[in-house]
Image (cartoon, rainbow, N blue to C red; front, top):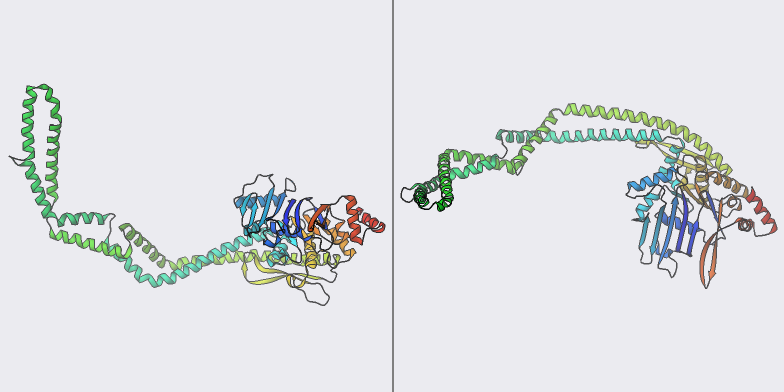
Length: 557
């Protein structure tokens, strides 16, 4: 994958720039102070860097930076993996669709970031682009000074991915077993203290022998028993109203039915009116029978009422303690029973989990030991190769050590931490990378590491600034050769003052500062063959026949 296009508008001294880049190696040159660093500033914004209102060009309302990223070829693994990562975050991109990152700064202080047209926060942008571009300069928090990145670099050099995955998996399994064991031990202490209470609770609920919906049935029964006398009086009254020989409803309906029969005999047309009367008589007869049956079930029994009320009291007390409904109380009892069963079988459970934890730890130790062995061999080899590369790159007295430091406890990444130590001066002890080297030295160390790991490194775009700090022409030539080698697997951007480095690049851009109508602006132009000769000549000390000839020689080698 590579950065195919970079657009910059109203950023610092830039008015408007639209640059197309080659897949491999591009260098940027120009006079000191011409504004070459504006490319770094634009790239940092695309990577989620801090947005500062002061970066907006004077007189403009907003500054815009946009980068277009394309696949190097159909089998571009980095581009494929990045799109998969974006897809997992919710982005939808076609297989051949370019990935466009846009950053906009406004004078109000608002910063807008987009990936493929979708808004993201600066933090999300930084997370999603962290493995796409690696910037190496004096002012960047470079990845190589982070110990986690140093470990990743060594593991990549050692081709230890499968072993690392094995350690991570066995560590996860061991940690899970250990947590289960510790949690069970913790619960055992707690439940042992609660055992007497749990037994009391279970016995109290079990002895009640609760039945589902029993409380509702008891309340109905209590109401019936408590009002039995009044219910009996009402039934008697209803029966009298229905069956009284002189004035009962049923008696009067029977009389009405006889009179209707006389009417029907006198006028057959009236026959259809008798259906409602007959139905009423039938329904009232049924009601009277049901009322009699209901009366048979009513009982006046003070002892039974007392028993029902006592049962209701028991259930009410249980509800206060264990749940608002009978189902909740029964569920509580089931949970208590499980806890009691666990207490009874704790020794067995603890022994089982302890064995599981111990076996998982043994497996982890074996996996970690294999990774340690592989790392140790790789660390020795890497240290030797980096030292050899650094001598060629002008750090002839450098000592480099990929040091392994045993951890107090194995982690998901193994039994040791990795730290790169270096000494660039004779007689000095090797010290951690971040505390010793300058930006230029670190860039060369990174270059050495990248060259050694050219086939295993997974960051597709590398940017080098100050890689030529304090080096001779001979060393610069060696740096150029290694950058060219590195460009076979990466897109390379180099900001340089050294003609020996610039002459090796595939494309050459020059940055120029101009003043027009009292306004200063920075432009960047891609150079053709003749323009490159002149720029290389300028870098060699000024344009002359001699420097032009030398420039041609450098470009042709």
